[in-house]
Length: 229
Image (cartoon, one colour):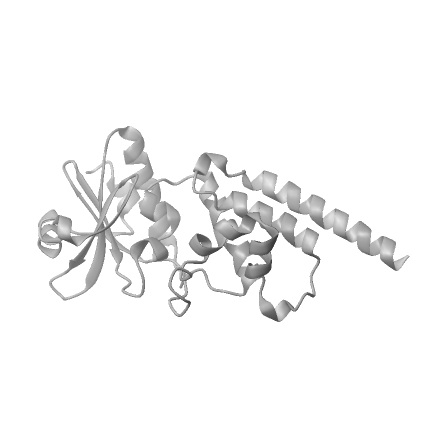
């Protein structure tokens, strides 16, 4: 634990007994979701604060490094669209991350992707960028519980529609009223589709995304120049 102290000073430390009591000893009835790094449980602390507790699966030293990286990053991030990391628990082989619990929707909708899956990867930034593109295209929020059933999570709803002309026409914000170039939009949508691909290995690197966007921009700029000349 002493070797970990340097990395976790900014996070509150919980006793394992506190979290066991809050989650009924990590009862299966309290499981909210599962990721590659462990299960997430809902819990109620003694002060009646509702929390989401991620009980980490530690298979190797790489898991330890990911835990440290996640604590460091989440303890420094403060944004209205990111779930807040409340604290941690490190007792023997039991390591936990404690987040605020958001009742409006499910945990997967509110935890950032790396927080749910437990893997800090370069391509998580690519995923986040891939979410921004559908936001711009549709005019919708990433998570909107006022949408019809099945459309609350923007990426889950939009991804299957990103691969066809009919789907794209269904996605585009009605307020645009056709005032956009379909071919250019389709190219950008193709990038978004790759960025949010369920399989991380199928996603491009951010540098590749930037290069493609530059090509699209340059082609569009040249086309506009030809039209004006």
